[in-house]
Image (cartoon, rainbow, N blue to C red; front, side):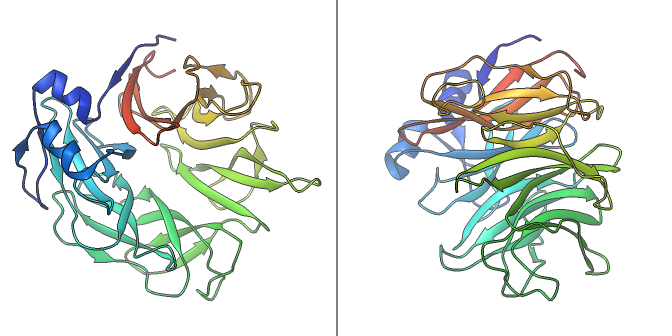
Amino acid sequence: MGIGSLRLSSRVVVLLALFIAVGMPGHSESGSAAEVDERVGLVRDIYPGWSPDGRHITFHSTRMGPVAQIFRMELATGEVTQLTSGPGEKRVARWSPDGRRIAFHREEDETLPGDLFVMNADGSGLENLTRDAAGYWHPSWVSNDQILFDSDRDDSGEAEVGNKELYILSLSSGSVERLTHFDDWDTYGSVSPDGTRITWRRVIRNEDGTRNAEVFVMDRDGSNKVNLSRHAAFDSYPTWSPNGKRILFASNRDEENYEDFNLYLIDPDGTSLVKITETIAHVEQIRPMFSPDGESIIYNRQDLEGRIEIYRLAVERNP
């Protein structure tokens, strides 16, 4: 497993291209990183996601103000385009398989639940998919017509306080299919490349009142749920390799104080666990995602000062 990280956030874009480009929805404008940093303070570029052709990544960021917006970066040039604007935190942007649309969730404020939205890849055609009392988060495409998400809704669409389950929404019919029934949190779902299996994070409440998180897999219909990680630490942010043979996730399992997160690979049957990043003191290496060709991983590094930046890690092809 080759290891060699390249930082993709604004500070390294400055080193590579001498500028960053940030604009209003559908447009891009050039400006120095120093100007951006002075204007908004500490920049946080969070939850990177690949476009299906591997040419772009999306992320949400406060680089243009205190409210998180969705941005798109062209990897070849480092050019960054702002895709959303206006009130409400826009988070966790994910591309549809055909690359034509992007799904994300928006939270108006800390007291209101999130809603799912889709827009065209250029930021146009914004559409609100959910309009009820429950919260909807972390979209992931099953197909061009279906989105996997987690929600605190019950089967009638009302909020079920303290609980989150996994669901699939059909865009064409509006129907919602519930996949999990658990008394805590099932979140961060990811669909296998062939569409037959789902991996996700389950938060488990222990007998002593503490919690830990495990990586699970199940069939597309919600059957055959299996705990893969089986560890007292927090295992989170699972996602599939492009060939469906490995699951990538973040965990603090290898550290004495459970503070520092690293990235790991594991087979879908729970075997062949491999740590692929080196520990960095007081840094969380989290929110990973494979490139479409399987040759690299993008992920966040988050430090104690609240700095959150995007890095790229070169790996063996189709591990």
